[in-house]
Image (cartoon, rainbow, N blue to C red; front, side):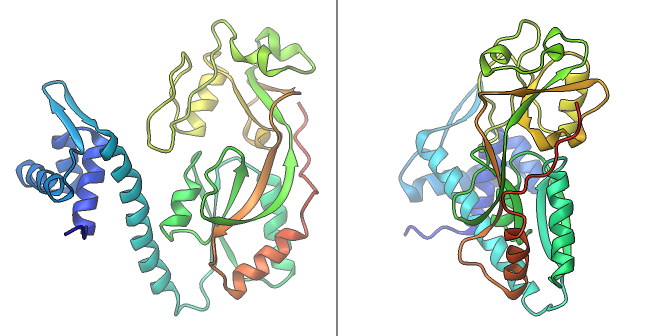
Length: 291
């Protein structure tokens, strides 16, 4: 029998993310023995080994990596169904728009103003960290998102392109590169003592490299100001830069397109009105702050 229960998917995801049965059990609020039994039963039912266990710890197998990805998607879909069903009868509720904190600030301001001018439904803005918008949309916690191609995960979403812009290197103000009028990717890819910060992948792991591991904009801002890292970001994201930062154009960095994203096939009069307002902003990128 291949039917999977949401309970056992939640159990498996907790273990796969924590890579430790004790921490996973604490996170779930259950004892460790029943959690271990549930994972063993799941492996027997599926006929595959999901986890490698030894004295050094727990690691995902290839099959476990597949189930982690599929289980997250399935749990998000269940959560989304519940969220959208509860909100279906509330005709006065605002649209929930999620965006990375500090990203596309001026564009977001203009979008909200345009939506208000056209009589669209009120918009509630939720700020998140890098890469989290897709999870908000798939779980139903948000109706629409500002996202960025090609860096964000847009699979399964309908999108409306809003603007395309170049990127800048955000550097500590006292660094010699900060005095240059422009840079290339080669200039910033291997700077002694100033490695590029590393963001987590979709599975929560970090790419290899010398740069510090970061999860939040505030961590990043501090590390840049302290001369510990640099990063390359869309020009409009400079809205959150500190006086201790300098932004320099990176002339050969890939262009970034800001899009308004929503789950594919998900429509409502309020979403249609917001999308129409967004279309009026297309190809009119917000002005970047002065260096």
